[in-house]
Image 1 (cartoon, rainbow, N blue to C red):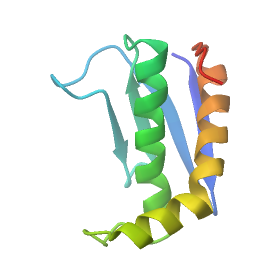
Image 2 (image 1 turned 90 degrees about the vertical axis):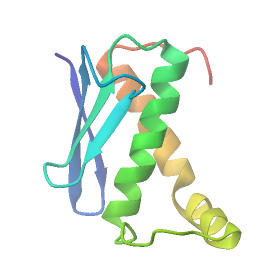
Image 3 (image 1 turned 45 degrees about the vertical axis):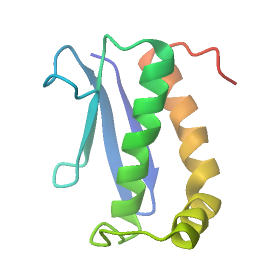
Image 4 (image 1 turned 180 degrees about the vertical axis):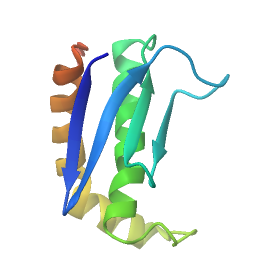
Length: 105
């Protein structure tokens, strides 16, 4: 199984692919074990999108905002302005580490 690591602040999340998951679930972030798991059988485009989704969860947790259940438009925009480039860059690196390919640049 290929693995990669995503680091934000002092937290390191282990990212790995899994063969099966619950129906309709493409990925999962476990804050307690600091693991991100992505469904291995996804297309490269869906894998990248799912990975970014899970990295956003991990980043929200790492910066201490996981307890904030509702975000207004300005808060969401500010979060993405501060962390979006880091999340996307790491997603691209993790895709390479996992051996996945994605034609989206």
